[in-house]
Structure formats: structure tokens, C-alpha cells
Image (tube, rainbow, N blue to C red; front, side, top):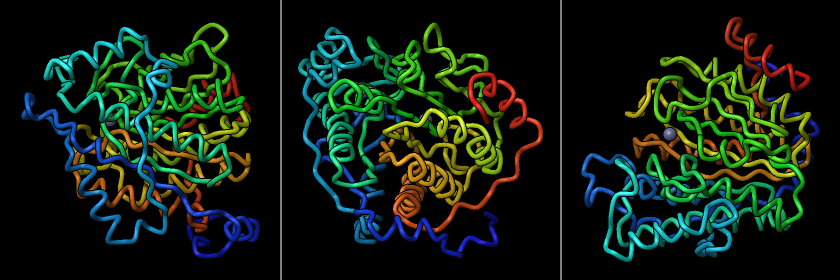
Length: 359
Ligand SMILES: [Zn+2]
């Protein structure tokens, strides 16, 4: 497929789109009550992020998606990934009226409930997708999750929403293999650690090198039995959408296709956008739509449902546009355009990842 063919319908895709149910958009009012600026006034992870996004979506009739209010996760769901001690610490900080979980992660009175609902949305979406209610899901929730480790909150994240959903899918809902694509500009260290030794979760991340949290080196491919089932693709500051799309199309998607997941989850951060204040990559709104189309096409090829969970993205108006375009791309049938392979970084990455997967 070429960019020139972008408005030509592909026969099999139009067939599939005719029967595809609308996407489900999960959210929760409780997620808006967590406000770290009470004690950390500089904090960019604010309720306005989701408020701006939902104002935009509501005006567009949710881009055709069906909004659903998400319940709180059960503590037993959260403990699929986190230690009981961690859950108790976050709950205790909230009950005590608030406290810092780490130098940049605040837990206020409402934060425990917000975090339970963020995880609950990811769980509810996963149940709906694997239960056949829809092919596509999106969770417009906060606090984000992908930095949270088993025993540790960090980087604005309290509970690891995507990791909890993946583990729920495998341990309770019959999924055998879950592919997690983390396109947030920061490495999803918490998710990577949760599944470091596992072969039933393929975790793949594109992230900016040299920024928080400092993990996700290219030569970290997982450990033990899980070696090869972690794919880290760090990119230099200033990288543009062409490079991200090239890595996705020529490295990650082929590996994920061979892995043959029965559920695809996206840790959908939008902080690689050129306007984002927290990083230096230069993606455009349309880049996220293109990444979504490639991932949607993968989902169609392997016949797996696809759900995305909001992570970062700290310029609210930009976040609103990026998410909207992502939803349209995930549920639309416009073909992805083909990315030219970046000659240097893509071939290096392909050589490394090709050690484990046929690219
Ligand atoms: Zn991020």
C-alpha cells in the first residue's frame, strides 16, 4: 500500500468494517478527582487533560464510539500485578489525607479511588473485548500506569493499568498471548518488569532515549524464559514520525504478527507529540493515527481485539486531537500508508530483534 492509495478501499478491510461493532470508550468520573497539584503545583498530569479530551470528543459525538462508565477495580485485580503491601500503602496515603509516593507522584485523598477506577476501566474493557462485545476499546483514564512497578509508584503512576489488564486476560479470561505496544515517549518500565520473565506477553516499546525513567535499553530483550519477549526501541531526542512509523512497520508489527496474540493492548501515551512539554520527539497528530492504523491492521490479521489505555500526553488541547484521531483510525477503514524504512536505526533494530523474530 502507498500513501497515494490512502483513500482507496481495500476489499477485505471494507468487508471486515461492515460487521465490526463500534468501539467502546471507558471512563470514570472518579479519575477527574485526583489532582496532584494540591501539593505539587508544577505537576503536568492534571484533570484538565481528560476534561479537554472529553469536551472535544463529546462535541464530536464520541467519534462514533460508545462511552461507558467504568467501575472501580477489585483489589484482587490490582494484586494480579502489585503486592498487597503496595496497594495498602497507596490506600493508606489517601486515607491519611495525602502524601508523596515518590518525589513526583502524589497521592491525595481522592487518588486511591481514581487509581482503582483507572485500573477498573482497563479490566472492564478487557472483559468486554474478550467477551466479544466489541473489537476496539479505549480507556480515557488517569492516573496513568506504565511506570508503576509491583511494589512501587513512580512517574505519576500508582497502579499499572495495562499490566493489570494483560494479566487479567491471561489468568482469568482465557487469553494465551497478549501483545502490549507502548508508544508513550517514556519507557514503560513497570510493564516491562511485570512481564520480564514471561513468554505469554510480548512487550514492545518505542521511547526517547536519555529521559525518564532511564530504562529500556536496546539490548534489554527480557530475561530467562522471557528473553526475546521484550522489545525496546529507544530513539534519539528530536526523532520524527517517520522514524517511529518505520520502526513500528518494519520491526514491531512483524514480530507481533509472528507472536500471534489473542489480545492487543496499547499503552497509549501522546507525549511524543512535537508540542508536548515533557519530551523532545516530533510526532504529529497524524502520526498517532498512522500508528493506530498499523496496529488495527495487525489486529485484523491475527483476529485479536485491540484496546488502548491512556498514559501520558501533557498538552491538553493536543492530547484531545491526538486521541480523537486515534479513535477514528482504530475504528475506521482508511488503509495505513507505507513508511520508508529508516536506513540506519531501523536496520540496526531489525538486526537485533531479528535474532528472536522473523521480520
Ligand atoms: Zn510519558
